[in-house]
Amino acid sequence: MTIQRWGITVPFAGVPLHAHRDWFVELEDLGFTDIWSSEVNAHDAFTPLALAAAWAPSLRLGQAIVPAYTRGPALLAQSVASLAEAAPGRVVLGLGTSSNVIVERWNNIAFDKPYQRVRDTVLFLRAAFAGEKITEDYETFSVKGFRLGIRLAEPPPILLAALRPGMLRLAGTIADGAIINWLGPEDVRTVVPYVGEDKEIAARIFVMPSTDRSAVLAIGKRMIAEYLNVEVYAAFHDWLGRGEELGPMWAAWKAGDRAGAVEAIPDRVVDDLLVHGTPEACAERVLEYVANGVTTPAPMIIADPETTRTVLRAMSATRR
Image 1 (cartoon, helix red, strand yellow):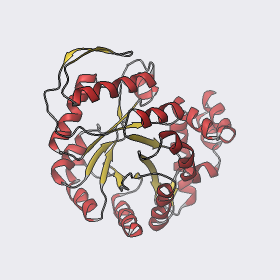
Image 2: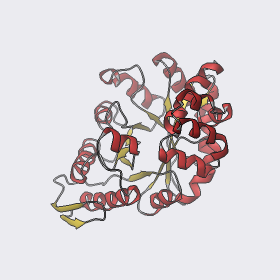
Image 3: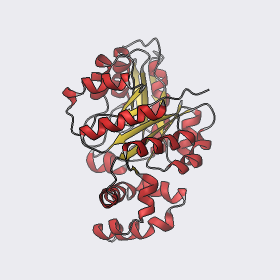
Image 4: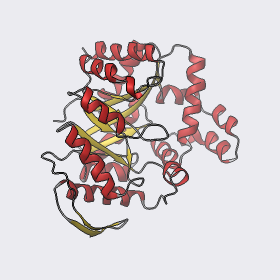
């Protein structure tokens, strides 16, 4: 059976990295088992976890996610192995394609064959973590004579960021589970069967602890417009069945009408995809994801530090 874990997304908004030590210690005290970083346009995926490796010796450390394109295969293996050596038995690698925006527009790397790139990266990392000397022409890259200079007693598990059936199945076959993102609790029931039984399902869940509905809708619609117009997320939500609801937004965005795109998003979509309300209501809503198959929720709290602490404590109390 897959163990039920309780994660949270870090770093916390409004808290500089050097001030996170007390936060990490409190997470342990509150019964959280994991922290999950990300890598978009702010902190890299490894530095916050390296700090936690020293400051919070019980927390498991994961990324949601490290892009498969933006580090070379050898450097990626070194980065993951270094963290795993710093925190033995407490590291899980979250790997994914990322998006054409991050890979192509921001890093000037061709976003070619994403499925194959992730598959090849997993095969390479498995061999590298096993201590093999690797000379291999994979479909999407080649490696000539690399051997990882760190010997790991316990190679870290690998979870794949996955949205649609192909990548979800890949996560269930060559990896140890999947990381899902930008979906509602009911959507979990749709995606989990493609991964298979006894696999870890981690979920990035966006949480806005506010009872100001107008503010929630305004912020939520901007977030949805920014993310769900990215090709991979648009295809995901079309597959989930939101094509009719989101069609007007996609059309306005493609026409260059950003304000019109935001306005076209139905309120119901915000309610589906963004957890909001009182801290206690948010905690209860996160449990709906767990009830539907998420084994490792990793809420991302969108709030000031004081409110964030209140939500963390409410989540802890709700679980107990």
